[in-house]
Amino acid sequence: MSDAPTLPRKPEGPPRIPGKPAVRPRYAATLLLVRRDGPSPRVLMGRRHGGHDFMPDKWVVPGGRIDRADYVAPRAAELDPALTARLAPMPAKKVEALALTAIRETFEEAGLLLARPAAKTRRAGPWRPFLAQGALPDPSGMRLVARAVTPPMIGKRFDTLFFLAEAEGLISLERQADCGELDEIAWFDFEGAKDLDLPAITRTVIKEAGLQLEDPDRRAPFIRFAMGGGKTTYL
Image (cartoon, rainbow, N blue to C red; front, top):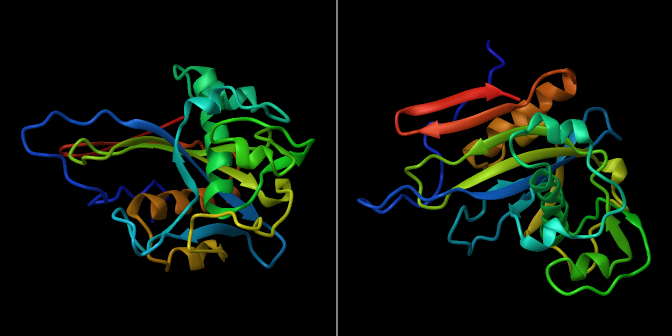
């Protein structure tokens, strides 16, 4: 069996309005947190609320759209420069901001802090709740799993970086009080995660992450969709 990424046949999302030009993808990022304190590696998954109009009740990896504040957010350490180099010609500052997007969204959705303890900082904007925990984001151990661009026939499109980090980098494995937009979070081994109700691209990326854990030298796929199908290159 090939270990090449399996491209989703019917990517989820609202269809594009007929006659309208393709929507320009928005930049986004997600974070696969992996813990190794059991018989096999486990990945953090969260279940979306049933009332969502987009992918209700699906199990997902925490993530979301980039915010302008992610470019200037304070941090405890820097992202590995080798990672930003792999994503050229995407500007290094955008890659760094997307890594912080993934950390911020993981806190907002799952209540977990990939960070180092620090003095509480007052700051306006989306980073205020994170910094109020007495923490600074730490992207230094993040790795790239994949990049994927939503197909042009979908009305809501994203250019997403999928990162992976070890759960040892978390301040705590416990969800912070009054934090987390996901209905439920849980840790699943990679085989168990495949049995969940997952978006197609999430299933593909989880499989890829498992392969990369077995082979750290494996290159990250760049998955792009077109009207007639998909194309995968490697970063």
